[in-house]
Length: 170
Image 1 (cartoon, rainbow, N blue to C red):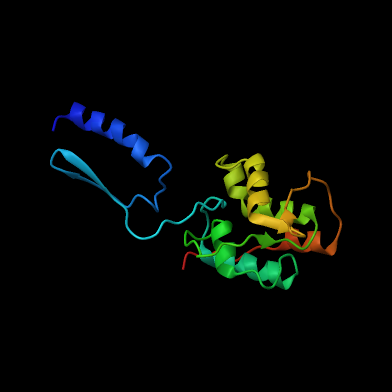
Image 2 (cartoon, rainbow, N blue to C red):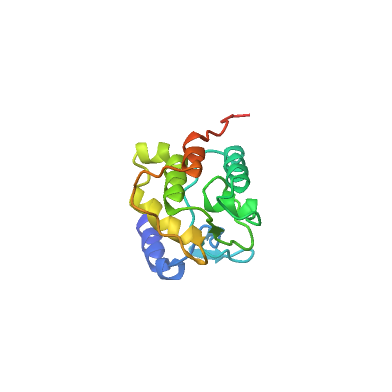
């Protein structure tokens, strides 16, 4: 099969593959002159989540801090937290949003602190963080809408500002 024929066949196949995610498209095999598409396993639905960064150990430290200080509900599942916040690529079978219990300002502080390196490197914008926060977090059962930055003087704000996870490559 010539290179042009392969390209033409791929272009025709695009309609079949529209909307496929990496989880859905596991094998794309060329067999002689025909292309065979095989899907293996069940499909995983697309769940909005923050981009992958840091490591699971750091994510667990954030999780423990937020639960202990009452920022998120104690029944939050660690696996959901790690996946939604981008500390893990392992998607739980049931992904539930994280219920935020404190002020919107402390939620903004936490997210900007967790993603400070990505904000600095311009790999994520504050607008995108705000958009994902509404998809990954709830407050009183409603999507969490981050507050505009304003100085909050409280024990919670101090705790958030002073928290620093121990980062280790081990």
